[in-house]
Amino acid sequence: MKAYFSDRTLKIIKKFDYTVLPMIDQLIAYFYVLDDAARKDVFEYLKIMKKNHSNPKRKRDLMI
Image (cartoon, rainbow, N blue to C red; front, side, top):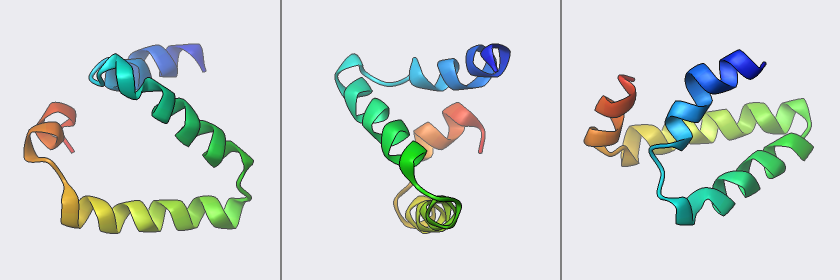
């Protein structure tokens, strides 16, 4: 788990301004307490949001 976090997740988190890190923490905590069905719903919602509200520069940063 540590290798994945440092190889992928940490690189993404470093792209955020320090002031938004509490929001990232809150998102992870909220996601943690959800059941599996709700977690799946979160991803479906995020796919729609990504399609309609993505920042092109940020997409290039992550190459997605």
